[in-house]
Image (cartoon, rainbow, N blue to C red; front, side):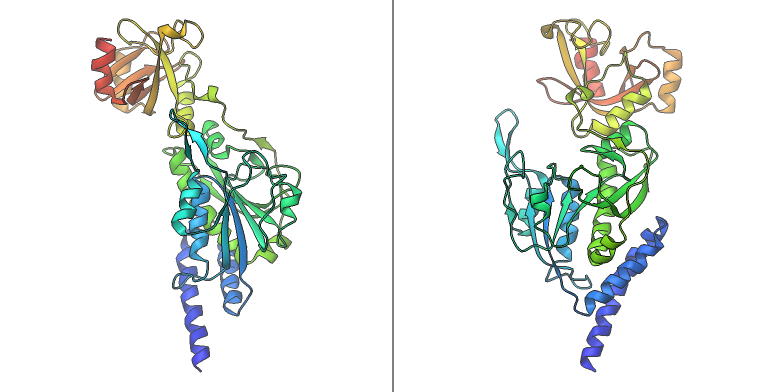
Length: 391
């Protein structure tokens, strides 16, 4: 009687978790996932073997997934199913960064240290000569940045699975979220796949969920939402891993690549780009890589990236790099202002209220925080007083 009561209490707690997950899953059109989660919790409560997981990652997205898995690691929090009995982390080694070239670890390393997990560092460039730690059932890969060779894949009896922030095969590669924003996509999502032994991001799909891209989304807001979706999906897949592997589907559709973002993409040419393209570039890169343009030195800064100050058009000593720290689309009052005070050419600037309005090949954008090289970031008003009037 006591044992039955404990089992019933445990199932009631796990069902409470399912109910909490049920609403967002239903809103996303994934009612089947609710049943899969409940099946998984029920089977776990009956003593199914817990998994030992080796987690590969590097960035903030992988940190969110790792934190979520840690909640399901023995001893788990109250009401949370114990799926994992051993969890360790693999992340790239520290690299020298910044002007001082001080060694700095990736975001996942800090998360793993805070969680008290064992951390493994492979060689900086390749896993081909790396010896995989022994005794793990499954490898979980989230934004790791390395190609996983067969020698590593073969170490896991239950294979390696990869969490990817797009609906594959669209945006295979290192920068799926950036290209989602660069191309103005209206939908994106998360795919969880088998790690393919020969081609990056080409494995069969175990789980996927779509997510709308909001007009207000930037890289960080999109990454935050996809991280939560990815974390829940990862637990769902690990809960029923054998079934998920058995039902995996081949990727279908046009293959679109999302290669690593080139440094040149962070440069804004108002002569070449429309307002929509500048805004898309900032949404994708402005909060991470950063985007910048140039102004001619001498006199007031009344134009950015004109034909005369374009990169390579004048000597480096005659150009001033200006980073666009905060950028946005024009507000209605600014459209009205520019209808009466037209900007004559792409790159021309004018200050209005709390923003520097910059003409593009077509249309205009508004910069509210700017950063002149070798100086501190300033507001649009400060930039106006310090550079546009008297530089």
